[in-house]
Structures are given as structure tokens and as C-alpha cells.
Image 1 (cartoon, rainbow, N blue to C red):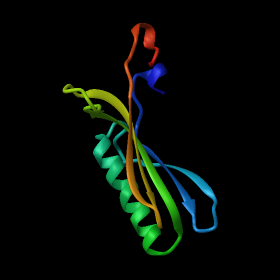
Image 2: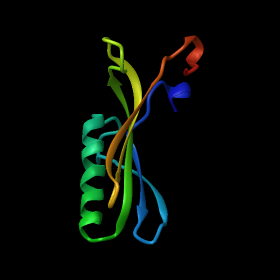
Image 3: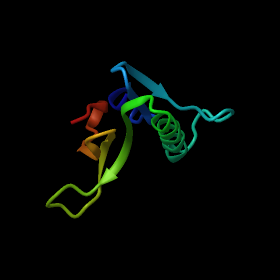
Length: 106
């Protein structure tokens, strides 16, 4: 998505309490390009509800972000995967990237 379109809408994935994996997207009715935070909030609400019902073992949300990599001072584009597990806790993983000429992603 990054190399072809230069961006992507936030999306998620979950693992049910039985180990089934499901990809999940979010949509705001009537808005084809809602702010990313609205989509992240919708996904988060959905995962919290399912977790409270005991239906989730793990969940994650992937989105385009800005971060300051260790040892640097400037913000850089990054893909963030926010991951949460019912036993192991929460972690946000940031993978910085650079958009090269012609759309290539490094």
C-alpha cells in the first residue's frame, strides 16, 4: 500500500480466544477518507468490547505514524503496529521507512 499509494488506512487483526485470526478494517459512514485517529478509535473500541466479552486472546492495529528513532532527533515516517495480548501485555512497534523516488519504500 505504501509503495503503490504512498499511504494506507489503519487496519487491525485479532486472534480469538480459540486461536482464529481475523483481519479487520474500520469505516466511517459517508466519509471515504476519515482521519486516521477516528479509524484507530473505532478499531480500539471494537477490540475492547470483544476483550471484555472474553472473545479475544490478542489484537493489533497497524497505522502510518511519525516517530523519533533511537539516537536521532528528527521525526520520521514509520509504520506502527500496536499489539496487545491478554497475558503478555501491550507493545507498540515502530518501523521507520523512507519513500524513494518512483514510490519505492526502504
